[in-house]
Image (cartoon, rainbow, N blue to C red; front, side):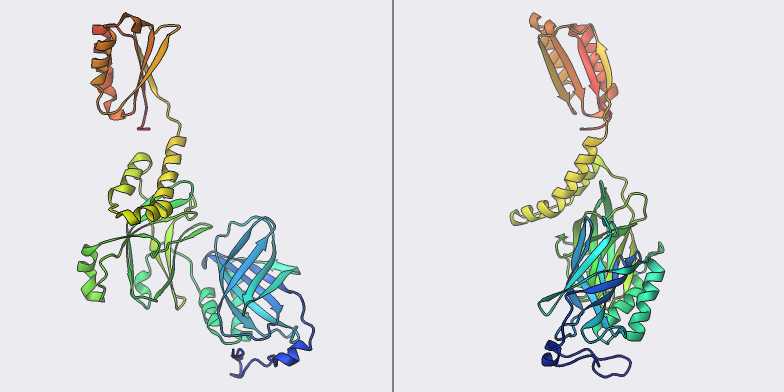
Length: 415
């Protein structure tokens, strides 16, 4: 594996040595992180420090990465670049790493580890570590990348990250160098912080690196590959001939948890493999409760082998979140009593009503033919708010005719 060339002179890394020479030099057990922080514009963490120098440093720009805090940890694929540090001998090498993720972590940063050529390398917090944010963080990292980093793909990607501007409220996908189309028919908020998206997406293979839903400190991956795909012949008919797209199954339904921060503006961020970033405004639907659940299910037409994965990963979690929020909302019923209810009823009959409220008339007529039902407590629960006025009139009429005392509990929403 080749050593990293120095961008300042086009030569190979002057610190590189043969494997035999390196083995003769004691290698420290860990390095240090001097500077780190979270970038809202990049939606991730940047770390700047050094690690024990690997026997060979290749051109890989993506590594397995773990950042540990007092009470939490972040892990995933990090983009890295190496840079020359005059304060280090050949036992260590400077490293800059970017790890996408949420800013919501618990505790102070303690250490990081990254895997190079199958070997784990660690760096702990330096005694003089600094935590900075946003512009100051980006400026510090960019200086190191421009002046000291060795040329590799990670350096270019990290430079692009440091130049990112945050979402300004405008759609900018059309300004990307590659054609990327993303449209959302509906975005349903699934409390406490998820969203179910229904829409369509078109891009050439290998162009898009990632799509994220973001708001405030939260960020969640929108994986088109793992979504429910839907046929959208209307989309292909409209834009396919002009841009060369032919895949009619460009529609999708996706669930993105941990991405909606209440009170913050939500948006979609599309990152290209080149490092370019474009934004798409995200307007949340006004639907909630049962209305939202019905909307989630209305367009779904799945075959048998698609049911389990679709409900396990997407529809199930979204509906569970919507239903949990629906049932958590206090439902104070309006109560009406017709006649004198028995003080010590022998039984209580609780009868839910939805749609067919005419059952009240038939049932009270039947109850009136059995004298013992006068010792019963009869409670009707209306789970259909639109029928409230009609039920009040019918219950009054039924009591006057059949003299069976009734209690009505009329719910404000369908539970």
